Length: 120
Image (cartoon, rainbow, N blue to C red; front, side, top):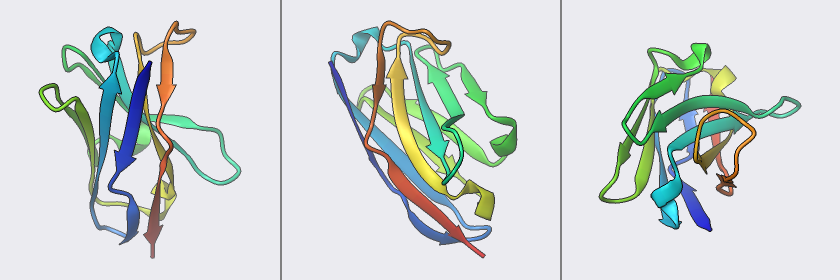
């Protein structure tokens, strides 16, 4: 079992920045990939960024060049640095962990989510 706890969401103006953190605990040794997803009202949950255990990264086209995902293995924490925020980035952001990026997965863990609101 893996527990994921997100923090760092909030209200920010267009063009501003936020950094989300996801602290992982439990049986994380089998988690080959950790990522951030988001879900806006009325929309499906979508992948924002992911990072593997060898630090290979993947980004959604909508956030490339603005968001950066990173991980601190010593702290079992994954970060999402979000710059140049737009109103379209408003969503609940979820941390996710699994043994691989593609689904189906044997393991697929989610945090409780943190709200990010970008105001114009």
